[in-house]
Image 1 (cartoon, rainbow, N blue to C red):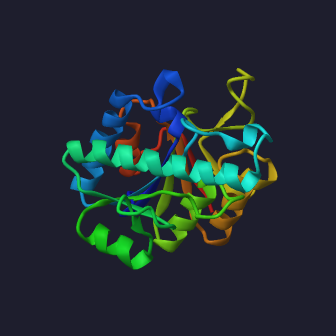
Image 2: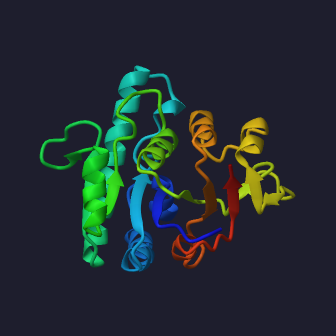
Length: 234
């Protein structure tokens, strides 16, 4: 895969929590920050979307209204973005958190022009709050922002080190793909991202790459086009 100049990086909230699976694991976040700084210093424009699973997984129960559950999830992603962006600042980067809804003085309202202005200043932009609407995941959020911001690729840093034909945690014989088309992902329900995000990427010719967050220098390598995982072509 060629080196990209505009990248949307999707981070799993649960992966950032480390073994505890909730909250944050500071060394993990610091390691991510150091790797991203390599790309920023090389002139790559980096946008980041973080899931909210380390705080809230609202689809696991029906005890409250789905819309309210999704709103809690959106706020979880805002908390994640604010925390991770502050760790990035301690590693010498400038950051800004954008949301599709007002959060007082804690974030700025998202617009493509505003995000581009921050990128022009060499800042890392965190796209938090998903799409701002219920019934859409952060997968859809990252696909939407990638298309809007005319990114070259979506990088998916996950707990699993690529795309497999079945869940490798359940099936040790699962086959890992080096490359796979977005059409195969949809047809075979390979769960790279959810169906809405998959179709958006297919229709807008947005490639993706999936790799393990916990592999050494995996983010830095991915930013350079070196994927030790799976490339999803369009």
